[in-house]
Image (tube, rainbow, N blue to C red; front, side, top):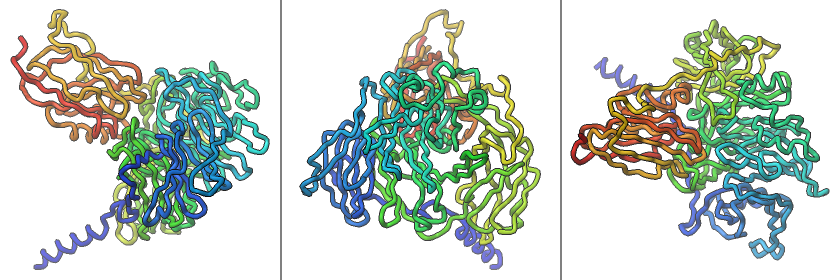
Length: 640
């Protein structure tokens, strides 16, 4: 009986201390009528609580009572893929591909009757020339951002592609504000009013990130510098100033001066793959314990991250944590409603997302419970001060509870970057501070210009809670009080080699011939163009994977119906994933390509399985395997 009581007590304790995101933030769908395709491109709340939403299909919908029983009315239509909306001074402003448009309902019938071009801009017709905004500033001006075009690399073939622009409605003057962006899908301000822009992985962009931009800043992508000498520009760099020789953005900043370092990097595949909206929590605690911090959405992984910033030497840097996942579609836009719930506008057509649905509108509500989390991380002269949301159990605080390593990304013209120059940081001490909620951690090998992975193990709150999320990533651009300059060599910046299950030359014993040639292509929306392939048992196959998409993909053939198992294993690679082409070392992986950059291809040679059956293939880039998959059916007579 005593043993049974002990087991029951242990079971109860586990139930008491276990945490789930839904315990603290519940997710609810906002009803959408079946005949409305609400592919959200932008949204904003009106003073009366109505939610204005623009869709990628060119409509603007007014949603009355979105916090209760919503009703929809069509306000405007016929717009060209608008990807931003702002309600300002009784009008609706939208960013279409080729202009900013002011929509006004003069007769009060609930429908826009004036479509006024605020300013327009030339287009080349390139599909990647997206346009976002506007974001109004306290002085009455507003900001917009523009994608570069895409032709296997980022290009700026029409004026100020890759720029943030500022427009003054009073003087009607459009001014170039900042340059160096590739796909600035979202931007917003912190409580102080400073502007931050989100960026997506691509050429010159090693991983997702957010960057604080001031007028005259250059954020890293050189294509936009084609227009740096135009009237009004304060950017003082030329396109040929940038090359792969710098190796890192930190070094480029040191050598060139005006290269704005990201305030926070988001490790690709771990904390998102398509960084999107940025929103400060201005609810003063009505949305939980993270008031004042930034919430950043991810379109590809259908989730939200949380960012805590600080200033060191006058520049922002900080830490990113997981916050809430499980949304139904790709999170593009975030807004707080009058009920202090977070409203998430979502879309996935052409931009597939792990949520699985084509579009959605959902609200996230705080339950009133405070999770046991890392609240913030602040840099010190020899490590970090890590603050938690609750007091800690003193006995759980020890150096072994903190696992820290640092790394960086290559700054080059290639698409994305693997994690490079990884260095373990031995934790020499971990001291609980008098407030009971902050731990001062000292580390060896502390160096600026790197991203620090902070993983925790064994920590408990004073109430016995486990951590809801046990990791975060701090971007250390500068050490408080100064510090050693980061030193790197070509050798320690080299990417790790991947798996050996990729043969790129025809085997000699094939005698220059093969039985079958298969060409597989990616398709927009994280899909393979062909989901069904066939081969004879034991066939000698020349296989080419072509990637006309605008993001990286690979091809991994598994040993059966093993797509989920291999995909999860690739996700577990963590920081090493990009360097290993997201190929886990496991017997379930039969053959694979490299990680294929956009508009390139990879050819491999392999022998089909001799056993007839169904063999799943997937793309193992984190989040892709759930939707990007197919089968190779081995059937028929064995090849001779």
